[in-house]
Amino acid sequence: MNTLFTPITAGKLRLQHRVVMAPATRMRTDIGGIPGDLMVEYYRQRASQGGLLIAEATAISPFANAYADAPGIFNDAQTAGWKRVVDVAHARGAQIVLQLWHPGRQSLPELSEGHQPVAPSALLARDTYGVGKNEDGSYEGKLFPEPRSLDTHEIDEIIEEFRLAAVRAKSAGFDGVELHAANGYLPEQFLLDGSNHRQDEWGGSRPNRARFLLEAVSVLTDVWGAGRVGVRISPSGIYGDMHDTDPAATFSYLAGKLNDAALAYLHIIEPRIVGPEDRETGYYAEPIASRQLREFYHGIIIAAGGFRPEAAEKMLDAGEADLIAFGRLFTSNPDLPIRIRNGYPLAPYQRDTFFGGDARGYTDFPAYAK
Image (cartoon, rainbow, N blue to C red; front, side):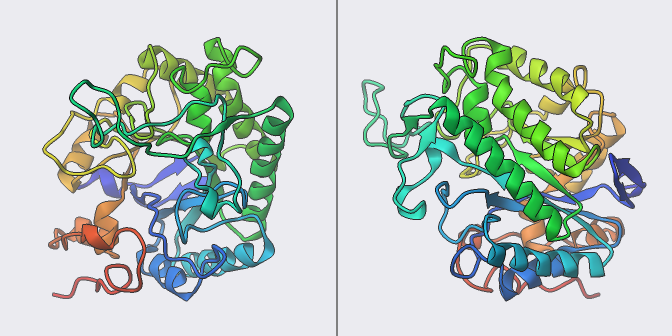
């Protein structure tokens, strides 16, 4: 595992190894979306000297939330909670960035002060896993509530919410922020023509559909400066009824435009992972997304998607990515970099404790002891 443990600079992030903790929604906040003692301990356990932690999807608005007990970054109490997380990560020599999140049409009214979900277009996201499909191919039931189309002035207001969240993340002491533009959330809803049917300056042509994502990146960079902002994308994602008539062209266009953004990194979810509710059903695709987009994006690439250490090392050696993000393995191996480096056994993750709950399956996994 030599390449995984060579130093690297990603924008302004100077790292001693390339084992990144991926952002993973664990739904363990205190009331009000405030990171509490449980989250502080979780991140403390997983911080390593010279390592990078990407904190989980964090709502930028009280009117946009898809998961109960997911964190926010839109008030003082949440910001103070995150500062406690940052402080323990820094105390262990790690760097940590916050993933900023607006779920768009995946928002649930009961978690968003009763507000109807918003989206580029009033298109219902249906069950892309086929669970509710009838024999004739039609869908039975709805995966998400019906959204309404955003007015132009509201789009500007959401971009301002991203800016304000970035300011709060900076005041909490984070080392940077990551725009969550994957998994069928709002930036991707604007980007793909399957979810964006607008005919104004925010839709239609590929440059117009990419505008929301790129303007969000721009305001984040205005707050943080060059080399402190990352972007996460899922070129093969289908969760939330996401699709595009020409995804290769759309994502290669986006990757090319992001060269001008002075990012810290581009974070790419590989094809074997299709969404936050992915299940291991035997589906597997060779990790090709980073390999394909490397031709168009010339900065640092983080690849994510169910990697085992051997596959991660192979991908780095081939030059197809520069860092590897591990999600599921980090849930059950708080000392994952040490285990990989020394060839220690890896503890199996517990899928039934991924989302919500208490310390069980969250902070009760011990570090490896010989």
